[in-house]
Length: 177
Image (cartoon, rainbow, N blue to C red; front, side, top):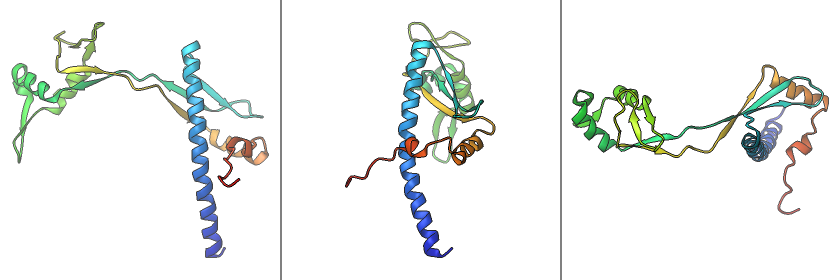
């Protein structure tokens, strides 16, 4: 293969890859949205992906339900620790900076609980942690995971003609058309 032919092949595949990425993103958004709707209506969290002419699933799409997070006011947290747990405050150098020991911070944040009224408390002591607020949970997201041999079955279905790539890709017409 000449350098010109190799470069042309790379350019064509790159252009197609960019277009396929756009179509993939739109297809994922549609599939994800429909799974969210199905979850809301029936509680379904996972769907299996099947191909024409193949008995088993080649992949699955699973809905994750993100949990609310926490927002910590670091200045208030440091002040609280200096008063309540002074041994958990350290000073870093070369510039002296006070901070809560990272391991203790992680341990405290891991045991926090949210009361029904939205108050955040230390799960061990029940003490209210005024320097922590509950953050809104991000929207649900999905993961697409191929089953063992799933990618290979997709390739086989393409080679066997069971997948109609022009319809699946539905590349948009150019602006001049």
